Amino acid sequence: MKVAFQGEHGAYSEQAIFEYFGKDVETIPCESFDALFDAVASKNGEAGFAPIENSLAGSIHQNYDLLLRHNLHIVGEYFLRVRHCLITLPDVKKEEIKKAISHPQALGQCANYLRNLGIKPESVYDTAGSVKMLKESGARDTAAIASKRAAELYGMQIVEEGIEDNTENFTRFLCLGTESIVPKEEAKTSIVFTLKNQPGALYKALSVFALRDIDLTKIESRPLQGKPWEYLFYIDFIGSTHDEICKKALENLGEYALMLRVLGSYPRFK
Amino acid sequence: MKVAFQGEHGAYSEQAIFEYFGKDVETIPCESFDALFDAVASKNGEAGFAPIENSLAGSIHQNYDLLLRHNLHIVGEYFLRVRHCLITLPDVKKEEIKKAISHPQALGQCANYLRNLGIKPESVYDTAGSVKMLKESGARDTAAIASKRAAELYGMQIVEEGIEDNTENFTRFLCLGTESIVPKEEAKTSIVFTLKNQPGALYKALSVFALRDIDLTKIESRPLQGKPWEYLFYIDFIGSTHDEICKKALENLGEYALMLRVLGSYPRFK
Image (spheres, one colour):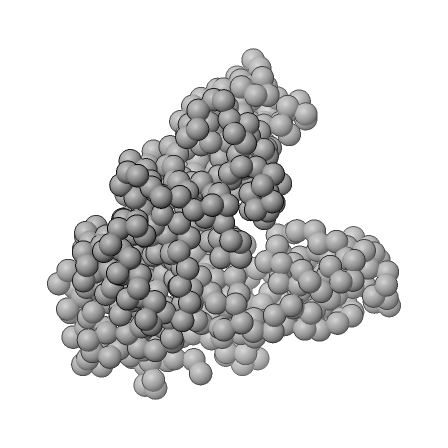
């Protein structure tokens, strides 16, 4: 089993893959989210793992846009608890640290922690990459903020674990494949659609779910390219396209949606 | 009249201010969006101008979050047509350019143009800042991508204007103040609210507008901090809180919203 992810070895995405598939999976690092989607589409990887939303920072819109541009299927989801570590060269003491490097989002999620210690944040492109950079630089006054796995991979010291300001820090990942699946357990379904730009359009669209007591778990809007201030809507709901009631709801939505695509039905993560 | 904006002199935000208020306004550059909101709140500026959405790239979520954290009022909106310029030192020829520096979003919006000319994009923190950096470096093989105004301000050459791949490139700005206003012309209103996490909740919320034929122009969801996978909803609709029908709709929404705040009623931009 091969699974592609964005980032360097030691990335949170890679950790999510191991937690989801177990330790026997082969992970394929990709430079960008574009490269990740391309890898899955070209079957270089058998599957791909893409973050779609963080419980503090919100949606990763680039991946919503990539779902639309590619013809892949969502075949699973996973919620990773993000625990940031303060990582240094071996034997560095906490008091020696003057600067912390990491991805801006990770730095932002540890802002209070760093402020209290008088450590200055400095943005770099990647969390796991910051550990690699730190090892190469040999700087003793600098810490990286990344996953436990990244520290272990590069033989670095974990000064402190769980340094994020808010512990309710989860990232939802989507597992992507080239074929759709029929989920056996409780399912979630993701769809994308566009509507005529007229009063009440979204209300009518939501009625096909509400009037059937189908539970929406997420709604996201993205700009429709070339049509300023018109939108694509992405919706996740509980149920599978193989359930009669959800099938009816989507048929009903299809009556007034200008475009409607099912991105996948997959086992709901609990 | 003083108006604060994020970025360096020559930023698109500054251009939007001059187009909205005329040439006699004094502009106050701020280092970050946080600093911009603080400047307005502390009355360092009399008003502030913050981008909230681009027609290609989507919402600027940081500013949605800042609207919630601050107690400011939206008092106006403006749609700026974004026209990117290829900017060099004087007398540089197009063929000499090997590299283009700008904010990643501007580079992304000119990706095809740059690819066709074989110019390599390189990210820097700011569009107007890239012109300043280029001037200081004196590099003849490098171009900056920024506004016409930025080129003029730094005495640089515009090699080509309107190099964006998609001409439907607009940014919507919000004008922020410390006091609410009563719009005299056709108005738009922005609100933010939270709902009980139960099936049909959003559908019911939208019904207060749909059943009164109130036209929604935008819906945006943002994560509720500390409650993973629950959301804040931001909605813009046509009408003013001083219209009887909109007042009723908001009263009705208030019956089941857990939190509801009006961010402002302001003249609709046409």
